[in-house]
Length: 442
Length: 164
Image (cartoon, rainbow over the protein chains, first blue to last red):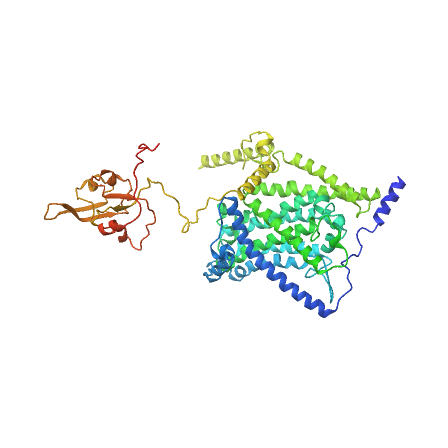
């Protein structure tokens, strides 16, 4: 007993991941830092905006191919379609509903779009580069609290949608806004909880550290292998967070016209569109960073060690892009395959399944990590990661087996308890009797 | 309130969301790589059936006159009453149409006019691009009918008269 306790204490004392690897480069001069940051900002912003524009085309193309069509191919062989759309949207009339609250109505599209863009500040998108002027990190602002920053901003994204719905002064818009707030609040919790095992493994909230931790015995140490269920929960929550099918209830066309952006026209409408795709890219990048090793190239340790040449930087950057694009495609694939959830199914999935699952998973993962450390496997060993991977395979099998018994999406989830039914009937009977008596008196 | 909603107990194969989702994703992925059905319209055109009945055409004799002898069968048989025919006669006693107008808006493209015509003069055509800038443009006069060059309907395939 005392031996086990001593081992536990030793495990607790063990420095988890505070190894300063390639990321603790000597501080560079302020001038280099400023110039490098400005250049990175310009590049990231440009690439991001062009990429988002092209994603509108990609979505149309993917949907077309899945429906055996060709998709847009007229304006510049299709490649200029986003430019044509943008031009059209700028030229169109901006409409302001009489009853709308104009300041918020104008502000809302920007509020929907900005958080998605700002999240990119902390995502590391490539291996650092030992340039002649000092080491340059490939992240705009490699904050030590990167992940917390992302969580904070992700919840800000709701405001744009809720305020758009409210300020339009239209019942459908309002319903869309309400739905999105309920949905995002519910899934935010599951999403945050799902990432706790990741943070447990990294021992830090810095995204650089998370990437570094995953690069150890890649791809076995990628969090998708060691925290598979967390990844699944994150994936599902990300769909809800970005308001995309099968969770696009805020803009359910068949129910709410266009949901929160029913009253919007021209560029303001377009901004919501851009915001959706920006969120798509951002969550894909987050998923790649948190679960798929960030910019790490699998099956090789070559990319993680010094010297950090420009070639390594470019290759890791390309790998990161490839991972993002894969997830973007995955989102589109899902969108054009699955139908929309019903509202109660959505809520039931978020609160009754994902949240308890995430909480349980934290406990399981924490115990597993502790157990493996007591058994003497350091977090960088392949045994540690392999053990976690094996555990996750078993857990995924169990979870899917148990949950997928018609429980994930049930045809009629909220059946009434017989006692409640009896009480409701009694209430109705009493009301009918009272009405009958009142009528008899008159 | 879901009072009395009947929940049918179904086997897991039918209620499993995951299985259905994965199957659906497989289907959409398969369709991504299938041959596309789009016809690139202005460049590529749909091939019409030889029995397609579109806007009319009046056939002409070798010397460029309408074959029509103004017998009046086509306005008689026309169920939509869209053919206006005023017959005329020249010095030799040959009948010809003074006025021959077809209102293509009224026409139901049944092809009876072609079927009834003893001179094989009026035909429905294998043609479908009929845009005009005014409604009046759709009343085709004799000149217009004779000027059309598109192929005409075969009405039926002589080898297969019942369309089997």
